[in-house]
Length: 606
Image (cartoon, rainbow, N blue to C red):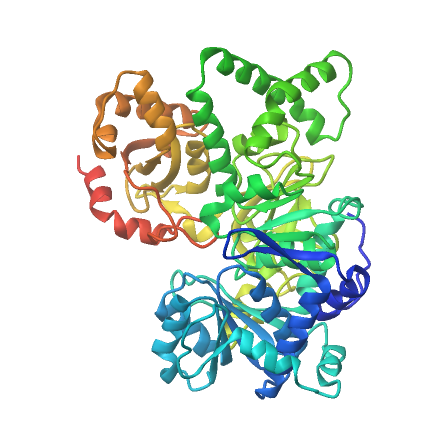
């Protein structure tokens, strides 16, 4: 891609530029107590963030101080973020689901002086540990409480106090003085073998990455008033840079806040976004839901669906290569879209999507092709917290399912030792907070970030991620196997919801499989399989036979040593609440292996 000229600017400056031009237009919308969406204008957001910024300054917050936000997605998160950054301070987000121990580590390591919390649950976690955090002075809670405990301030009170302060232009002066290359945030990565590391990202890292993302689709974001849905955690850089800073603060899209990740499908139908930035798990769930419903439909509707999906498959080259449909096929696709496809997309709230993005993990080719074939432009990319997050992506006119496309503007990518993907660009982090050793270890001698991901490049120059170095399975026979490829192949099945491959230091591979229960239960009814509960269902010989064939079919493209010899069907879906998934819905292998240790051992008993 050609070089992109991006001027140095901080996040508050980028925000204030849009306030000046968008004024009373709606910036975002949240659900009130009655469940109705209520708009907040750019001017209202500006007034609130200014008031809160002045409050923070009145509490002694100086440029470079750290202020944490421990909350689920909500408009107050944005107000707090803009206030913190406008005061010249550093935002330290904490996942709303973090444990008290995890929260303590982040607040202590980051030297946070004030902590915003969303609800009573987060407030109580911080109150439990505040006496062991010498730097933490105050908690500010977004929710309204009947009685506010000591050391806690109501958000509404902080806001009104700040609005009444005459600071003689100090806040504006601080915004003007922000060095765009200074740290804007510490984002703590999940610790797998040790404590999490605080990734230091500058204002420029994130504003540049927001502009790089916009440049993937030149003119598209300026073509109409866009709408986005915020449902991935703002504590994660993907949601923050792409939806919040990129789509909204930079491009002016209106953002609706979903109630939480569990209400996404319902919220999608009501909001009907034109921009949809998501993770693979959501695409998987949507496709699985559609296929399960079709499986329950009358034969005629199933036949119409299968015909439409056949048309969609033939449509893939047109969407992927940016070609116009012509002749009889154009008529056939128009008919399939009118009769079937448009109704399917409307049923899940995706019928207005202009740009669909997937990141945070590998999107299976089957899921990508399902939506792309229906006419939805799904651009899969690759990134990580350390790259703000986006570094590579597919682009309109050159979409290659199964790959993460090519490097973004001003970004260099190459393959290093052991097939490791290396990245250099303006979106790459400043380093890890208080951890020079880890920072040095993460960069090559010529300044490339070592991603820890294994990649390869195809003949067109597209990058394909084939696994994580730390996730590599080394069998007792010395064979190196990437479990991600096998898991993606399994997840493409209609009857498989989640899968985790086991085999490190073992002489063969096994798998833990979570069935897609809506589809499985429908199959059972159609095939005369009766069951009292899920345990009864997965133990049925006919069901085991179904999964034996499914696993065998999924493994056809893999070599002998990559074949799954045994598997176990689980009865409970993995989730963040039960501990097996990260906030961005990746499987925590270590937790899964611990939780199902006995099941795994049983699969290796001869």
